Image: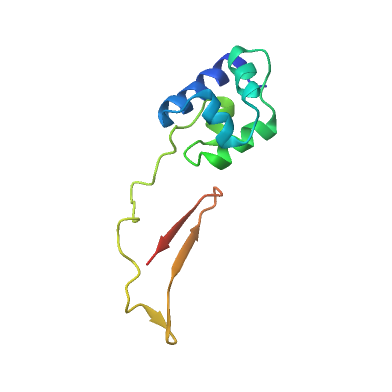
Length: 116
């Protein structure tokens, strides 16, 4: 079960991190502004749909952290961050075809995309 006060604090932390108002937050995740107001005031508890919308729009928000407060926000990036390493060059090709994009899927459901 979600502790409403702690969830509200995590929601405020997300809005502070992205420097957005409750109204803009509601617009971004596609819910009515009153929904955010009611959750922040403790009047309503968040629905699963509401929580999932947050994690879909704000990719740095970990679902487990949002619900239980365990984990990290923003999501920690791997210590071996290869995103700045150019892995695609104009000479990278296979059978005469040039690579446009590589997508790496991880077991935790996340992924990284590398573009030329």
